Amino acid sequence: MRIGLTFLIAAYCLSQFFRAFLAVLAPVLTTDLGATTIDLATASGLWFATFALMQLPVGWALDTLGPRRTASALFILGAVGGCATFALAQGPGGIILAMALIGIGCSPILMATYYIFARTFSAAVFGTLAGVTVGVSSLGNILSAAPLAWVVDSFGWRETLWATTGFTLVVALGILLFLRDPPKPEGEARGSFVELLRIRALWPIYVGMFICYAPTAGIRGLWISPYVSEVFDATLQQVGFATLAMGLAMVAGNFLYGVADRFGSRKGGILLGNALVAVLCLAFFVVPPATFGIAVAMFVAIGTFGASYPAVMAHGRGFLPSHLTGRGVSLMNLFGMGGAGVMQFASGPTHGALSGSLGPIAAYGALFAIFGVAILLGLAVYAMAKERPA
Image (cartoon, rainbow, N blue to C red; front, side):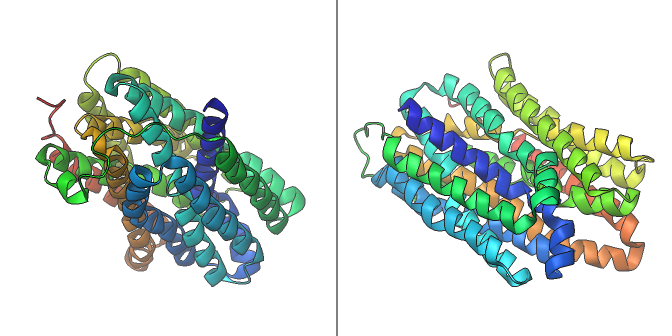
């Protein structure tokens, strides 16, 4: 099981890599393929959208077929196929199709991991393991920053994508060969997503999942790159540094939330951390950073305090019936990735409209401020969630 989990975590590293690497590839894709910011926002949004839409069949498959077959099959067909499609792309349409396929391929990976943890460990330990898993897997987020910028600059983006395709295939085969399914509990065949939606205690947690991950994912996955490029005339290496710094902060934040779960109110920490993210997003509009260094520091803070995804997931985990673990964690993930997808889809046209009225530079601050307002509205609902089951 340990070897199989190692390959599963490696696959989630790749998932983190794929959702964030457009921020570094954006300049070369614009030059070589004529991809616009709206094209890239659409591609990024489709990654999250297909990822989110797949959570319903993934949840059913985890409870019915088990994590080994579910994760390996989708990762081979979607992630490997999508990565190859990306390497062959001749225009923005190819990039958009590739990101949609990769989103499908990555959709079962974290849920398969959480499914195994939920079936093997107590709910109290689940939060720590969830945070550590996301933290370790965030190595992919880091590799998609400065290291990716160096590799692309040295070897070319197509060559980089072909190498990534090969590694992705190796990881997929490792899951198929070495992962072992945990035993199924009684009642596995009973229940449905409708049953989960009837649990009212989960409703505000679904809202928390929908809004808490979206702004951080959107900024790190795309908007940090055009922001520092246009506002501060950043080079590719500076873009790599900024994305690396925010990626490292997200790693630290995942561990921070995971450890904090053991020492106090999980819900309180989530509320406080995301409120700070909202304030920082609003600050980009109210008091824009004067220098590149200040901007990076603000992105680092957003990455740190916005890494609450596993903590919110762990909060909801405590309310799930044991026979619906797969469907439950997948449904929560649908809301988390769905929120990121909706925000990415909307962010491109919104920035375009704001650019027409405020100018391209001020439009970034206004867009980030919208992210901040969305967080505050979501937190107002999440604040009504119960701390734990009665």
